[in-house]
Length: 165
Image (cartoon, rainbow, N blue to C red; front, side, top):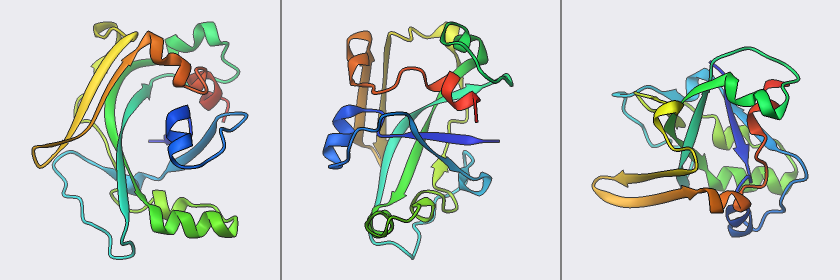
C-alpha cells in the first residue's frame, strides 16, 4: 500500500507553521511500517520529545492511472476514511534547518494509523464533511469541511496529481 500525504495544503495550517505556501502540491510518503492497523497499540517513540498529531482525511485510490484529467479524477477513488499523521516536530525542525528531508520525523513505525472502515464516497456529501478526533475522551480536533471552505485548500487537484507519480 502506498500512503501519500499532502503537506501545506491548508493555507491556515501553513501560516500556523510559519511555512510558505508551495507553488505545487508538496507530498511525502509513509512506508508500510508506518501504517498502524486498527487494534494495534501506538508506542510513543523514545527518539522525540515533541510528537504532534493531526487527524486527516484519507482517500482510498482504487484504480491505476496516469495523466488523469481533473474531470475524471473522481473515478479513481471510491472510499474515504480517516487517519492520523504523527510527526516528531523536534526532528522535523532539525531536518528543515539543515535543508534535509524530514522522513525521519514523519515515517517512523506506527506514525500513520488509518480507519478500520472506509465509507463509500457515494454515501457522503463531499461538500459538507465533518469529523472529530478524541484522545482519551477529550476533543482534540473538529473539522467541518464545507464547500465554502474549499478556498482554504491550496490544491484541489490532488488525486490526478498523485496518480502521475
